[in-house]
Length: 161
Image 1 (cartoon, rainbow, N blue to C red):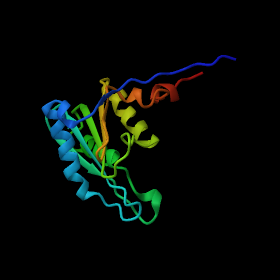
Image 2 (cartoon, rainbow, N blue to C red):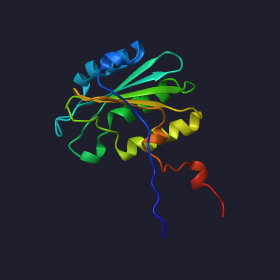
Image 3 (cartoon, one colour):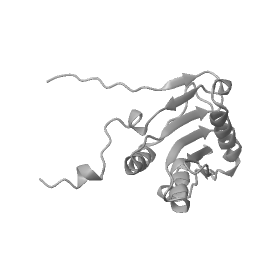
Image 4 (cartoon, helix red, strand yellow):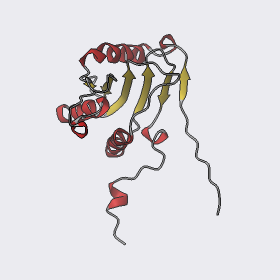
C-alpha cells in the first residue's frame, strides 16, 4: 500500500479590484444575472457567465423544479446554451457566482465539473473558472482539471481491451 497526495492550484484574490477589467466585468455581469435564478425551493441563487473565443458572452442561472432532479445548475445552462448557439467557439472562461456568502466560494457540483471537463477535452484548450460567493474571496482555476483531478473522457470509456 502507498499513500498518494494530489495537489490543486488556484489563485485567490481578496477583492474584485485586483482582477483584470474583463474578469471584473464578467463577475459583475454574473452578479446582476442572479435575479434571473429560478430557485424557489432551495433559495440558493447561482449565476454563470461564459466568455467565448468569438467575444460573445452567454448567461445561465440555476433552474429548479418541484421534481428536484428535473432542475439544472447555472453553469450547465450556460454551457449548453453557449455550445448550442455558438458550436464552433471555444469556451475561454466560466464565471460562477452565488448570492449567499461563504468564507470561500462555492464550487461546481460533480455533474457540472464533468460537463465542463467534457468541453475542455473537446476543444483541447483549458477553460478558466472564476468563483465568487457573495462577499467571499475570488478563486481562479486555470483548468477544469484543477477541480476535477481524476476526470475521465470518451477515450477512456471507448478503449477496447
